[in-house]
Length: 275
Image 1 (tube, rainbow, N blue to C red):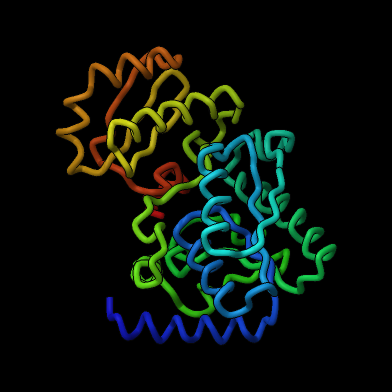
Image 2: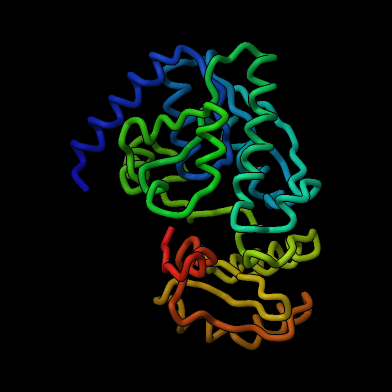
């Protein structure tokens, strides 16, 4: 990564935000949306507002962390709630699951933006998001949601670099996606499965594994950690096996390919995708 290139893109981002004049930011508290909100607040001050949505598939600790981050940045925050599991198209968990989730979310944000008088809704999608199967992007395009980080040409590595320069605590935060992404397509999403995954991943985080996924294959829990964590996770294997079985899993496995985002997409059209 070239630092001067990242800074040039950051300046372009500033121009994009200023041209908007005011905006509503879909804010999850992750690396990308935190950087976007911080930059938008720098440029627009009280002409920007963040919206964080609580839901069944988003851990409460992540929601609380997002609220705290918005307070640290100083940006006004609207707290709201969405209920994805009430949408049968989402709960059925087809390959277009994210499309239905994002369609519902963006429709909700459009109503909020209209009530509050914000002409634009922005999300934290970056250039890396263009490389994977992401049906949620189709929903964003249909609903007119803008992605300023993409418009500025920013990649995740550059966003982490710029976030670190700004002193944002999320600069090295592990990637996170809603818990429904741990359930294979075609396997129905239920609150029970979501709770199992939430407790399982939180337990592994407490053991010191920061980049981790637990994939839900009914009675099988498939754990993904970074390859350099393999030796350490095997050190805890008896504790992990016991705890996950207490959660209701019958078998606990370690994926030898290691952590990669979007591993559930690898079965689509027989393609191996990494996103």
